[in-house]
Length: 189
Image (tube, rainbow, N blue to C red):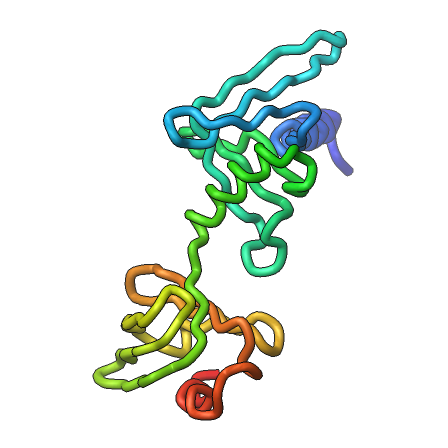
């Protein structure tokens, strides 16, 4: 049987968790996205319980995709300079065209991922694999350590590749690769 103090402590912990887990959704009607010194910034209007509004200004914001492989324009975490989440964007469509352009440009820079269109050569030596590929960004060369762990298959047809420096590449469709390219990579899939 629980004591009265234990029940009180449990209720307090639940209340504290709900305070921490509260999500502030950012959208066009409560958030203005603008550029300051070439970086995205935000002005957020926060409605208080008494009906009044306060304005929070963030001169620099950082964007992080919550689901980077599936939902490219939805559930974007917006963080301040101290890497604290200030809100969540459910969809970029909730903003006007100018704000969407600023947000999309920032996401494109952060998640820049060349698309591999052809694998010219793939050689292994001493636990490393050396890749020479054609991509939408031109010819690229990179190295993977532990090739099996550096490839992430998303669904049946898409593969993400992460090199030794953390750079990301994507093969949008295994089915669209030429036969020679597919033969070079199929061992690792």
